[in-house]
Image (cartoon, rainbow, N blue to C red; front, side):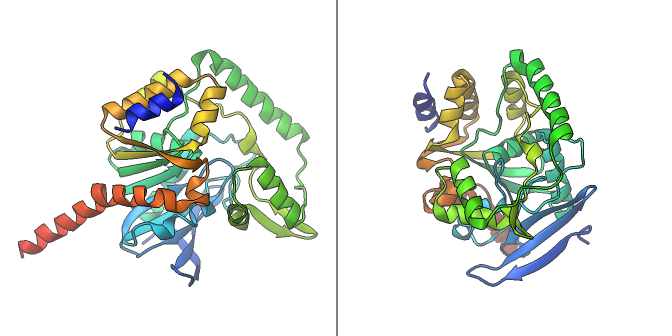
Length: 337
């Protein structure tokens, strides 16, 4: 079954928490800092203090700015917290010698929601952030009520035959990085930084490039440096087989909306890696569990480039699966008074 056919079938006391600053644009936005053992995890907050909690997780090499254009179009009664994952944006890099891998990102999410004192919440995850969302929702399934996956299937399986090579490659790359990488980062002009990000992500609009660079650059003498940790480029040594992914996926209790882009990574990556059968198996599992999978026109960053395409789907899903049920519960409680 090819990619489009697969999709076609499925279409049927805040502990150390700090709010650093606010801006008064169309919607108030606060800056978040959560202390972690090696520094801090930073992020942004939209929405009322007591709104329904929604955690937003960005993709690989991006930052929480990826949600800047989408969140203002989503239901206003939600409290959106978008974080810069470790090694991305304005968050601290992991300690020397540490790898970047999915279980550690899940641990970071756990630290953030513990600091926020959230016991039940929704997750919106893009790309790699969707994979973190999938794993978290499987391990802590009692904490998550809804999941929105943006150009992600929640898991990215590896072939068991590649596991040993992946482990060795990741370790070799880390050792080489530690031997050869200079401490001082390369300094760019802002214009050159724009060109580099655009070259790496040619589907990003000009506006989207500037949005991601707001948190993706730091000013230094002579220009700017990229904030991301180079180690995020090293081979991820903690990947799961398809069988493991399906087992984890089956543990998710939350309602799931999967939004795939016609020109997105799901098509190119799975075709390139010859993982079409794995893609089909994951889609089939979601269909069997009555989750929603939809295809939209656009590219991998459609939620950032063209949020108006994605926002109605996310809003309707949130409204029907979470917000309307909360309203109904409030009405029932009120009627008993």
